[in-house]
Image 1 (cartoon, rainbow, N blue to C red):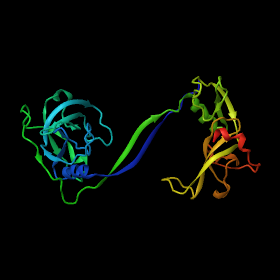
Image 2 (image 1 turned 90 degrees about the vertical axis):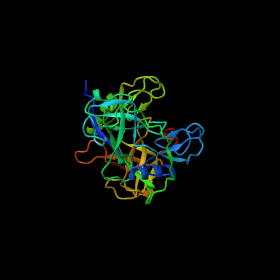
Image 3 (image 1 turned 90 degrees about the horizontal axis):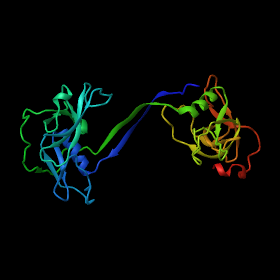
Length: 318
């Protein structure tokens, strides 16, 4: 049996968002070593603060300052920290209810081992040496000098949320590292592409041919094991003109990206159209794949020179 393919994959992008008055005050406060919460409609104090009451949906603006000490309400040990996590050595993920708050804040606890962590332990904020107005301004939590002491019962002080040079937006680098496997059906499809063949699979019930194959028919819900070679030529069913340059993609703008129904397939696949001015690409255009030297998949599709396909032959695939 052919070995199923797998490969490491990284998906990452910068996520940019603006901040409302409550989140702006919270993050700016962290930069100034001040932890702010917000009082809800029923009088509870939420940390981190939110803009709207989770129960009543009322707008919340009543900011209060809570303490930088608190109590662990629950925890989990992390023996193998990953890139980008708060600490490089093993640590505990903890929910900490800061003194004066009614909800818990998730962060890391610097501890020598899991046997030193317990629910109810007293901890305090360890501030980052350089603070920019982000949750990482709290470097982590650490054991409080007042271990064993009761939580402070003082009423949190009102705060106007005003700071100089307020943080009004953040950029978070979202990243996901994982090992991807296309599965049995798409492994066969990818291996066939390396031989310059396009192979799909036919449903034994409705007899539709899926390219790329999915391993099962989405309509009938049965496995598809009967392999069928399709194409190589096909028909443009619909398309778009791309005017925005993608990172690390060296293609001159504008260019056309299309859905292409290969001959014999009942599912259109994606492909770039070249070899024709972008403003001459049209529905029904007959195209064929173009392979580069050593390429494992078609670089693009170009016109075959055949007459355009009649709409009725591909209308179900638009």
